[in-house]
Length: 412
Image (cartoon, rainbow, N blue to C red; front, side):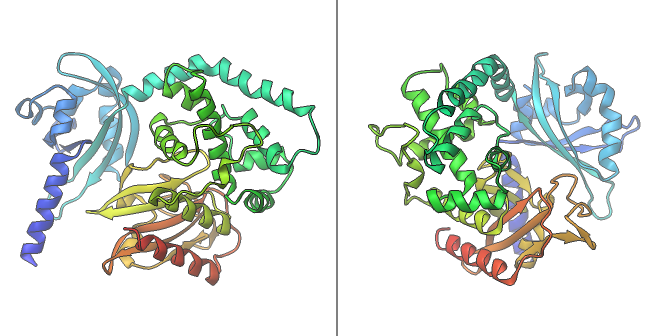
């Protein structure tokens, strides 16, 4: 047991030191209440332009801009009260240059010792620059969709259902909040009816249909050199994260021939790829459609860290490769108890608004099940929704998601 504990500590230390994310451990137990940096990994001190010796022991306010300095005590008290802090902030490098960061901080309690604070930091300079590019494209994006809708609206009223749906998606493709619910409103259908109709006629879920239609239009833009950068194309077709778009687009073009037409009547949606990523997308799509949920995730869990391997969501709020602390996810009980968890209510109230994780992740329905490798829990398959599910998950629905997880287990 002692050797296993030492090995686990060593593994955690290596993960901490070699992570590309900037990690810091802060001691808030100071005379003025301003936390001091007591440990950090290389990514953290290099991000701020320091050597380790210069960085360790420095008050954390030294790397904050003026607003951060003013808010330091208040934010520290919030964290010490047990409420995690998740903000976008501006930091200062040693040379005085400013840069934007996304910060997540939480209290850490070690038995017999005073509380500490652990923080993770990501440089979001690139994302902020991309947001500026997006604002420049706003007028272009609005014109693309409405012009196309006007051109198509007076044509043959007997067009196929799929073609009509495709026209609506393209007309709204610049809106990154356009999702299955919005599409259902446009065609005056309930969400569940639309899901069944699209799945029947296209072979994929409504969420995948919207994504593939956007990718098909992006392919047309790229072939015609419509935009100067991939980021411009990503925003023009409604993706929030250019990196995520890039990854999906590479998968997409691997499934089509370069001479394929991209007219509204062409349907790349029916093409099935045999690679593992396409398999994961197919499994998530199948699960979401069968359970009438909106967010599907396949995760790998290691050293109390939850990494997204594959994800389908209506508005791309998560992307593959993102890492979270296991304890901050609904999957923590699935992993720890090694069994399926199905929630449609909590503490006798419909929805999950009383769940301790609700403020961080406001879900109203959740079902998750373990993925096994070599007899141990490797990760989870989970489906959820921000919409209240009034009925409990049925036994056949629980059995269904467990079978999907078994299929994933054969690939890990």
